[in-house]
Length: 261
Image (tube, rainbow, N blue to C red; front, side):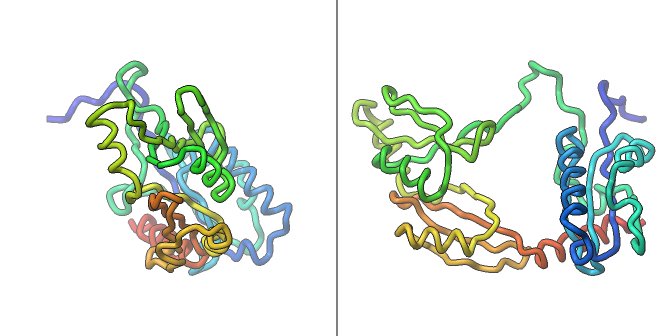
């Protein structure tokens, strides 16, 4: 017996576009800008899943959503890498069964059905809110997104529309056990992870600011470099960047697996 098809839009498939050639070595600034504009457009219309360079062999990959191959071809009409001389251009359907997706291919539930729409904020408990605001702004470069001094409420983030960090200073007038339970969350491993363009530069900046470095820059086997550090209250934060070689090696392996029949 065949299961009944779920009503609504058909789930979009994932497609992999690969261009085998050393893009960065020969492309001009205008070429790179055209590629960036194209991928940003694919992202704005909700199709982009992943994009980056390939090393072995050299090239460029793009993973995106489309209903079928015909639609995928239409998406790629504006691809500036489509007609590069000396390159090999391929369009393949990504196989979730072999390589996974990393995204949900099912259509979202109807509005009002209790679907999650945004990861809004993450609380971090601090002992001195004013000091913490200064540190997160001046050392990490976050922006105050919302601040109500009367209620001692503040949110900081990387910009409008981004997930915020809410800095909470416990107050005795909250009463027990809420005050003690919140205070016990000072100096914990928050689980908050930032991506940066250079963990080495971030580490230098943190050291100059007198921040605690809990674990210096380490190269991870999956292609990321990580840095573990703490805010003035000992709350642990992690930052990472991706080396081009490490990210490309991981991406190339995934692309090869996806391309297998």
